Length: 90
Image 1 (tube, rainbow, N blue to C red):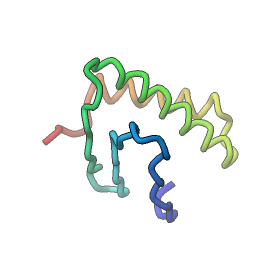
Image 2 (tube, helix red, strand yellow):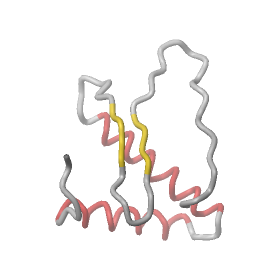
Image 3 (cartoon, helix red, strand yellow):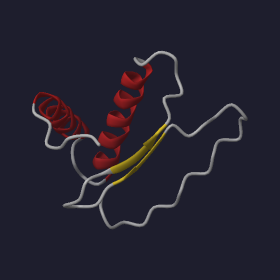
Image 4 (cartoon, rainbow, N blue to C red):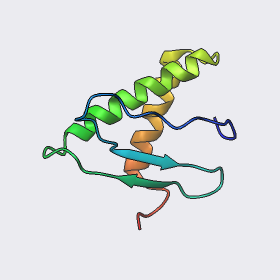
């Protein structure tokens, strides 16, 4: 996951697409992100985050971790982070 070179995404060809989130992560360091609220309805972020979790689980499955196990672990730590944040937002 960390240390692998990834190419930046090319924006989709449709003119209405906008970038909504960039995240940088480094082991042992705080994540940094840029976020555009984009939608009038904050709940849209719930849909996006659920989609991201499923994509991440599929990516781990491609590396040999069972997809259901990866998704369970993602959700476990998602809930734990909400219950007891490991960092404060600046």
